Image (cartoon, rainbow, N blue to C red):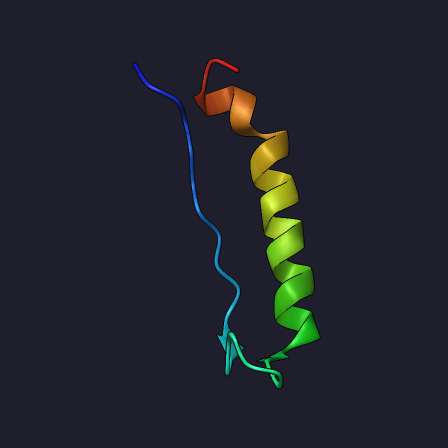
Length: 47
């Protein structure tokens, strides 16, 4: 029972400041991971 949920965090430096830094490759790979997870969610959850 309940609602399936999850969290995906992408590493950054100096979050919540004017000079936040992120590696664009980490962002791209995180987006790919989230896309694949959502595409396959039906295998594991009744969505």
